[in-house]
Length: 217
Length: 228
Image (cartoon, rainbow over all chains, first blue to last red; front, top):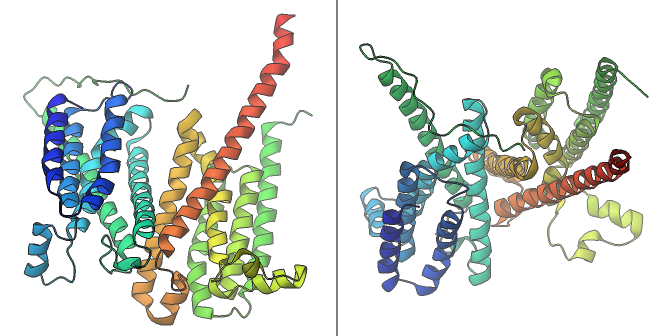
């Protein structure tokens, strides 16, 4: 993780952690992001990503930090949406689930493209499935936390806000974000290739910055 | 015993068709007077699709006998669930008949857990065939060759929960409730997915252990020959 992003994230995280609405919730919400950042730092040689990927990851983590600060159900933006669109609940968590797919798909794609030299459609499908799998894993962890802390609340707990189909909607939001990100990436790559090969330029095939390396030993 | 690869292909293809025929018999038998016809039809929509895909892609997939058998076992189990409607499968009555004890009573279960068993079995039985196809397609070995099939099982399980939700929204009422089969458990989707992932983990750990044991045996067998 480039130092500027890391420092920026840590400062923002620290600032948001000064006066969270709910301290316990803040600590719980911070466990996974900090683990993730730690893993990125420790594994920076094994998995070194592009600056764009690190920017996307930082953006997502910042969104999650805002959610954690306001315990998701109280985020002002979500409240504004709630009253503006006459919604039954604060949908900021759904926005972040969507952002999970939108922001983290490209970094994952980068990792997979480096791991396996396979056809593009194959890698794209694999990324889509992985994101859905991760979204499912997140829902499982959320349900554990909810059952550990407030077993009496059931789906009325903070994350679901009383929605019996919360898990499904969250996973669907993440999937939609992933699909949009994949379409944007494919479109962007196509446009870039077309722009490089535009008439009037000596077409030189762009050198691959990093050769695709198979993880097959 | 030296068999050519063509002979092996014929034998494998014969085995595949025997399983298809066997499954057709089981499926037809369970299609007779199911508990709830509408729920049976809904549960079987995906089965028909899966079997069709398996038959049409049989040459490309070239599943091993073990993989075909695992898929066959899973589909048969699912057909039982579809026949009785998952939440009404009388496994407890069968268990009581055989052993004189209630399984739910022994394990302290409050609900009909046949669906949970089948979710676990889904991961347990189907991750191996997925790995077989996946490894052949990507050439991945080592950790990723075990982890990504598990991940695919997890995500297909999550997709299934989304399909259930969609069906419940479209059909609603009793049919929707029967198809989702939550039986009032608000954490149904999470538990279903966790069980599928656990089954996948068990299956991949077992597969990796077996592969490890086999390769180390080969090494042990080969070493003296190399020395001599």
